Structures are given as structure tokens and as C-alpha cells.
Length: 141
Image (cartoon, rainbow, N blue to C red):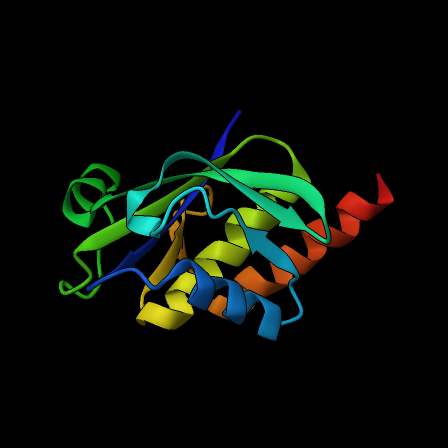
């Protein structure tokens, strides 16, 4: 079973370097592959590392309105017209990667994180807590 979360935002996506810097500032030592010059170019698996361990998550960028309509999401600011979604399986490192990316991008764009499994907006602090929890659990396995 795959999990999915999204960030709804407006304007351009921040640079790969800016996203990575926000993660590092929070003590999340993720590296983002330079396979793409910009996150807008991503479609499919985005390779990442965490303390040199290989990981990553699927990333897709598009228009938010279709998703908002399909999922019946209400109450979002109508200016949040773009979306970047993250999809992963049961791997805890991939979960941590997706949460870290969503948190950093939401922080940089003023966007909101939407957790499909909860059917609700996820505060940035909660995404950070989930990321740290996944990292701790992954170390224990």
C-alpha cells in the first residue's frame, strides 16, 4: 500500500538547495539528488540520502484544483493553485524523506501540507515530528 501527502502552494517551487538548507537547519541531514535542476522538473522517484544512506520518494508536480476537487478538500486558500505530491510505500526512510520535503517546501512557499491518510491539513510542526519519529524507528530496524 502506498501513502501520499501533498503541499498546496502558489508561485514557483523553491530551489533544491533552499529546500535542502531548511531541512539541514532543522537537523534533518537529507541530501537531494541533483538529477533535476529544479523540483518543477521532477516526475517519479527523487533519489535522496540521509547521512549517506540512500533513500528518496516519488514526487509529482501539477495543478492543485483537480486534486482538491477529486478529494473534496474544502477550506483551502484559493490562491494555493499548485501542488507537489509525495508518494512512498512502507519504507520508513521514504516516509521521512517525504515528510521532510513537504515540511521544507511548505515553509518556503507559505503552502499547506495535506495528508491523504488523515484527510486533513498537517501543521509543519507535526510533519517535523513525524519525520523524526520515522528516522528513529528506521534506526531501530
